[in-house]
Amino acid sequence: MVLDIISAVLIFLGAVLSLAAAVGLVRFADLLSRMHASAKPQVLGLVLVAVAIAIQFPTWATVTTLAIIISFQLVTIPVATHMVGRAGYRTKHLRRSMLYRDELAEAVDRAEAREIAWERQRGTGTDHHDG
Amino acid sequence: MSEIVLHTLVIAGSVLLAASVVIALFRIVRGPSILDRMIGTDVVLASIMCGLGGYMALSDRTDLLPVLVVLAMLGFVGSVSVSRYVSKSDSMTPGAEAGALSDFTSTDWHMPRDAGEQSAAATEIGEPEVTLIADPTYDAHADSDGEGEGTGPDPGPDDAEHMSHGDGSDRDGSDRDGSDRDGEGNSRGS
Image 1 (tube, each protein chain N blue to C red):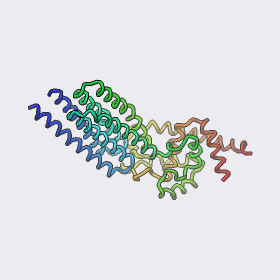
Image 2 (cartoon, each protein chain N blue to C red):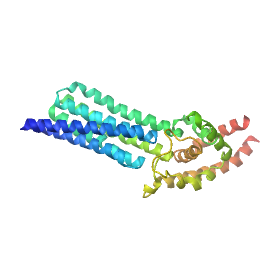
Image 3 (tube, rainbow over the protein chains, first blue to last red):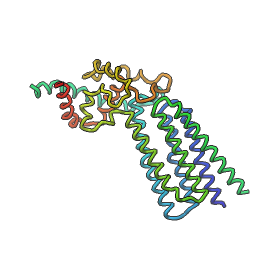
Image 4 (tube, rainbow over the protein chains, first blue to last red):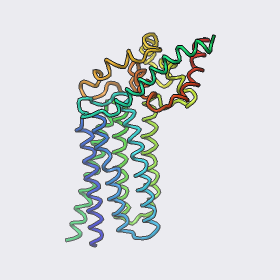
């Protein structure tokens, strides 16, 4: 019975995290802020629920499957979030005024300077090659 | 006594999960861009996973564990495919990528139909000169009201600029050299 209550408390905490993510999703003004809010139940809420399941069924099969689920989620969530954030940066779905510092812009500027230098080089180079 | 505590916790958790799904659905309906909708879908999926896990824990159903695996994989695949659709420079094959940067910037491969005119305008402005587009409008174009403009991937001159931004950052020079020269030859021949 105590274990039941402990796992119910863990599930309740997972639900609270999920609600916090949903509220942050509505309240925040920016794509990146919304991503920040929405990552909480995906990892921590799932970990809490998995601990609740493992408390209820402490067998090897269940615990290993839960470990697989959690490790899979821990690996894939950063990748998916990174790709969403990069797509948002490229399509400018972000408020620049909310950024303290845009470190990616420096890299973009450097790459762009490289691009221009290379364009110039190609402009002279293709004349020689094509002629 | 402990029965009452247990039932209260379960009911309160269910209500919270249902409320979070409804609020996330609100963001999905109203979300200004497709990426916001994707994040809302992720939150709905996380709530479903939490609810399913709670159901499994409290009603002795370990046979639903593979469903959790499938849901985790579904969220990952959905996010990655939607974001690859949005940032179009990702969705080209490596051979065509470099040529696509300079020559096919304005084609509407991965764009909706109504983007045709704007991108045609982008062709005449800046085929070789990337700097002209990039410098002045870069900061100024940040969304004024905080919500992005369109419902899909934004078409038009913006995207030409993004492709030049994004593509330059993750490629090295040698790869770009050979294949883009091919692209140059094609455009000149046609």
